[in-house]
Image (cartoon, rainbow, N blue to C red; front, side, top):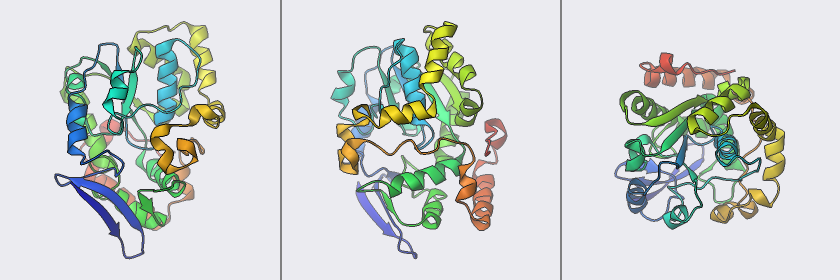
Amino acid sequence: MEYVRKTDNQGNIIRFKRFQGRCFNKDIPGNVGDQLEKVANLQCRPDDVLLCTYPKSGTHWLFNTARMLQMGIIQYSGTPEMIEHQDLRVIDNMKFPRMFHTHLNYQFIPKMAKDGQLKIIYLVRNPKDVACSSHIFQSKLQNASYTGNFDGFLNAFLSEEFLGYDGSWFTHTKEWNTARLTNPDLKILFLKFEDMKKNLHTNIVQIAKFLEVNDEERFLKKVEEAVGFENLKKEHATRLGESDRWKHLGDNGRMPIYRKGIVGDWKTKFTVAQNEKFDEVFEEKMEDISASLDIVYE
């Protein structure tokens, strides 16, 4: 494992861990490899739920929505436990039914998940909003993985040497899309952030049916109201939003999650040249699957 600190020609700095030629978030414990092995061998149960997202794709929104449905209780649950960042004894000791999360590419998730021995919910968000939100997120952290302007961040985002979890949004999305289409054993629900924004109730019904939990209309309406953006933002500002795992990033571990929560905010940040470059890279990298994903940008 190599700790990498790169500075571009604009003075922007990006930090990550390189393991077996791949780039991983610098906050993954130890040498990365040991943690990935523990994740792969995580013992799971049929009533476990694994949430999978690329960073800044609506993770906390999905988690609190799905967790309320799983538990049958209108209660804010804060930040999900991330299996690649956490001491896995914490996961082992969670109360059942369990719900945990990963930003990892498909190849690194627990073997039992690949074998269909638990349920997976995968959420994808359009990459322009992901890039915009990710840069603002990094700018608010202490000990951030990236320090610098948006232009440098976008250049890194479009490459494979990014601060994510084994590569770019493009690689992550392609690998997960291939997995859901080719592995018949996967018990997976595929969702889109933009669809959830457009019709949250329909997606809540879909999640409830997938989890095989209470789908009584009155309860689902209460969940829908509780996970409205302003309600979650208010709850996150309380002690419930704090996390010991992320104290080194500031604000008692309360991550700067809730900002706008809208579709199309990238238009306030991208220049015309940046947008044209992004579209060129997207077309090159995603040409074979862009039609099946049907990404919505506004």
